[in-house]
Length: 141
Image 1 (cartoon, rainbow, N blue to C red):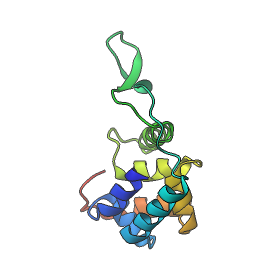
Image 2 (tube, rainbow, N blue to C red; image 1 turned 180 degrees about the horizontal axis):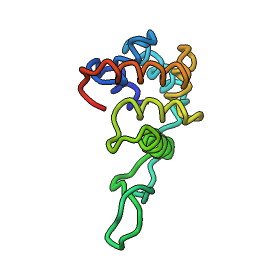
Image 3 (cartoon, rainbow, N blue to C red; image 1 turned 180 degrees about the vertical axis):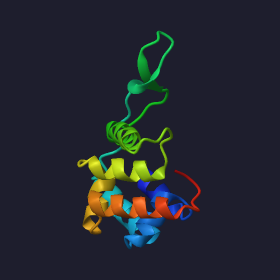
């Protein structure tokens, strides 16, 4: 949920602009986060050890990317999906657009549930992310 709060708050980023166009406001996300915390339905709060993900070479020459921090399982899934979105688009850097799209593909993530209640689907978000990218003049991606 914290990642969604950050994306909604970054108005000059690809994801921030896409969320604005989809009618998602920071106030709505904050309210949903607070409600979710009170009911214990955030779903993104259990930590795990660092993990190696596909995509980059490690010291042994194997293809992997190590995430050197404890991370909640849902967040790890969102990052994996964001990397996949980046690779699908033929890009080399993960920006806020792929993070938003990865979030929506992570069905069980609290942030995806919140976005769905606001009427945001993967297809709608992808359309807006692509539109923002085509226009240029953004801080990332």
